[in-house]
Image (cartoon, rainbow, N blue to C red; front, side, top):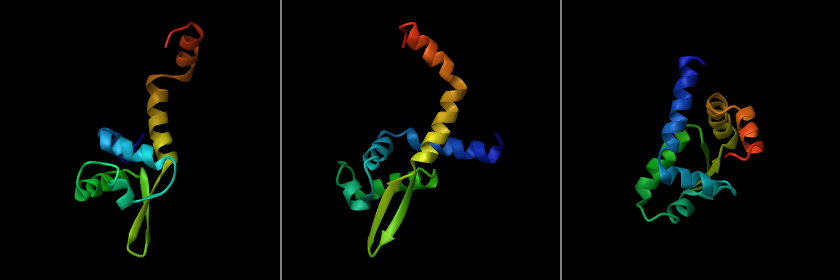
Length: 106
């Protein structure tokens, strides 16, 4: 992996380090939401949610679409799956998981 790709992957994991951002990603799993709808789900300020959305967007985990004065956010599931999957494959190969599952270990 080259240094640019390593930086991209690091930005994904930095974005995932925060529980609010992970919850935003879970909320977007069922479809597109406006910034206001996302903010309404959390007991923190709108500007704080905007910062979290900015981190997720910079990491490439969400994309935004503007419609009039509203901003819609959606999950970029393939980017999340690529980077998390690559990491899991490196530290916990499938065959280890399958073998342990068959033996009754988790």
